[in-house]
Image (cartoon, rainbow over all chains, first blue to last red; front, side):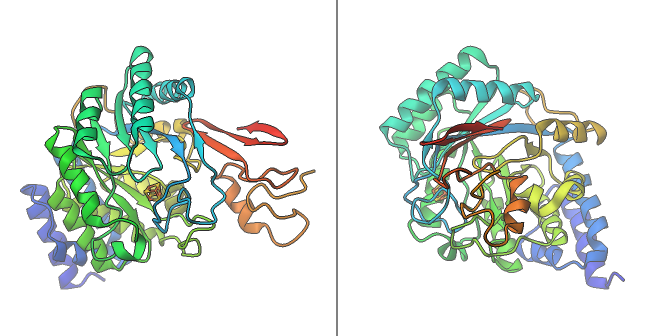
Length: 336
Length: 60
Ligand code: SF4
């Protein structure tokens, strides 16, 4: 049975977010996250209406590739690519022909975004040179928007990437500011924020999200949504925690499906105009049915195919699902 | 017949590999099934390659 508080928060969200386009506040997000399971369907329906009203029916499709895998000096406790843990992931560098081939494979799925990722604290000269060469080679052969995720940047590196034509830069805050010290000790949340500020100032689109289900409280999830809303990123990739063998968080459980879906909807209600992307871990946390519910519950972007070190659903399965849901794939150079 | 589990690197005949089996659908192999060396794995949007310095490359 819905109680009066339940009705109130959904009614408030309807008028404030759906009708006026103002995202929910931190306290309101926390109320949404506390909704009982029998209010999940109306919550997802509202989040879908908000997405359709403020973003439209199109879905942005992206592929990602790891240019430099493993051996990272940082200690993000969820990450199999940290060189500080006993993870089975070994260091690897991708060569330029394979990078171009990956961009081609991505474009073939209908994706308009291709994100080049490196497991580093921040790029050194060798990595920046490899990225520049890779972007030039991709541009010669593939028509696709190129994004990068190379860790923390200096102002000069931000300018270099902008000059290379990188249209969007990903740098995740990962979790709420108050929980970050439990997740990472080798750098601070504020250092990450500073890179995002530099990226925004340079005119690149900002992509910033995180991982939910790493042991943070619902209050910290609401805090994180509010912090993202303050940042105002163009895109928020939402990853669902997937325990990685050998990492400090390797024995944590994944989120229950209902909690994960409540988070999806709550983030949409906090960020009505943002590109909200399904990213890593959705297969293991949500399964096929949950992925469909998420796409009908506020999500308007997906990573298709494999991730950086783990495998995803085949790209065709997601493309077919979008067709079934009558959600057109965003065309190249269109703006959501 | 593999000697070592490609997910955890221990002997296939020893211990419980139920979690490894569950993981395998969404994970590339990490350890060489012949010698248990950690492999160099590259995941791409549509596939993966896993290279053992002794036993060569597998892909999927
Ligand atoms: S900085 Fe990135 S690659 Fe390095 S440990 Fe943290 S999440 Fe992993």
